[in-house]
Image (cartoon, rainbow, N blue to C red):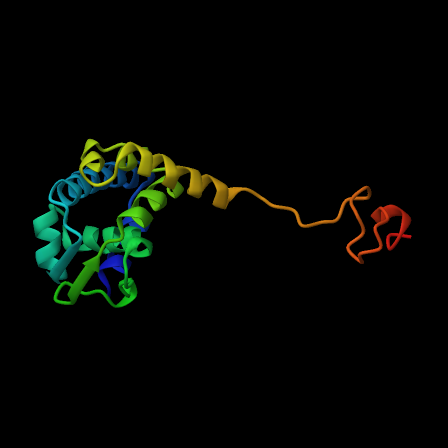
Length: 163
């Protein structure tokens, strides 16, 4: 069974209180792992999954969860469903995507890490945050009653094709 599936099952089988404790412990480890990655500017992390997990201070199963979380921020995604302890892994991190995805996940403990200052400037962070927020906004392409008619007649929509 894959590392990620093991992680999911251990959370599902735990009592609600134990599951909450497991998640809190994981989030603390995840924060430390990201701080290490950002501080070392590790754009590429490669090796066996178990070795990378140990290097980042995670258990093998926790690395499965970590890989699932960082997956959308990688140049080439990892198949987390096939990830085993002895799997060869290469994580090529795209910093801009990682920063935006941390906002998307509402992981304030990660996107506020001081180690980001060595990777992105304040201006870059604000630009990425603006891009992320714009991507979440709903945009309507509906023609309003008082808008010019899309047929090109020059009349208002309500007096032309809306009738």
